[in-house]
Image (cartoon, rainbow, N blue to C red; front, side, top):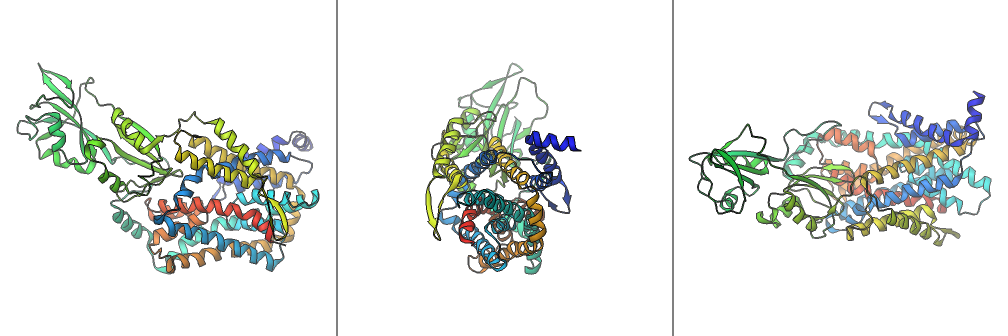
Length: 570
């Protein structure tokens, strides 16, 4: 055992990655619907490893990884954050801010009543409001207070202690509220979600991992032209005009000397019985074709085929932002659409329902399918291609980080204390700025979504693991001294803002649809476990739109509370 401990002391990076590995194993354990998660799991394991003593990781490692994390918070959430500043999203913006603001007030009142120091108060906010970023922004603010090395270290240890004690119920609280509030109000979330889906123009099932919709929204079929078909004797353009609005002729094979020959769609050649038509469109419209004398074709010769493309585009066109899919459909005529369809919409990593009334926001990732040339024509009117998995603009990314560190040097005075923004808030502002410019200038600063999510998650996990390891034995002492008090205060900080703000949203902001009310509540708390529970209860993806908007806003505001708490708590 001593050899193992000495190895950890000689090579602290072994301790770091051991904390990550064991932390994520711990985070995967599930009790009912509750799952601790990799970040909290890594912090707990790191604190335990830190009890061996003498394991020290350079704080520069912690600062760099936190800067990476917070920059990506701004970059990923920027488009949705700025999308919230419009008339249609205004009530959701207010709801998200009110949840964050009431949460801040609750933390300050609890800290004052219980006599918590700046570190414990910030940790209470980080865990009770489930915003891990507060650990970093509060830690940066503590570094700027001019305290002695030991005082600063003790206070930052208390941030980690407060977080670790209150985080578990901070995560459980929204899960409980999603279950309890509908019971109190007499809401059936599954029924309300079905009603909302119908109101939006259809239904969309919420899929679990590994599941997929077997009957896609868009279909491609081949038909033989019958002797009595309405299409016999017509040209390609005439057939296209005769088809339903959401059907499109993609390819024609005519029978010449017992062999099928492909002809151009815009040819004047007339279609005869036995010819083959490839037609694309929304599944609901194909039923009309059988009554028009088309017979669906089964077996094919391998030389007869239809190749289409699928392209993911990031929406940057302001003229399309905040319009529903139906409004965009009606705005573009059939010739302009030319057999191109929206097959999927993704927002902040969550799949949206592609229903007629689903509204699109700047930064949404839209999957278009259709003919390659037709998709390419529409691409410039939508946005730009989502970055390839191997592509990241490291130049803009690096300059963005430089800008963040420079912004962090800006100083100001609160309550008689001179403080600078710190690298955490600086990189958050920089990330928001780069994310915003990416929407305005499509080719600017693209970072692949997978790479961005990795840097965000890995950056935060490494940061909290270093905090936990460096906290060491004082962390256990602080837990023993303040544990029960913080646990009770965590209940208050978790539950009170939710109850007050849900009532405020219902009576003042008139957010009365049960599904939207619950989605706004968990989004305004950045509560992913609560959102997962809500999706399970609704059975479809109707909560995604309200959740993603408020989640992006809350992520930004809650992160700002770290230095504010440090400045205001005595």
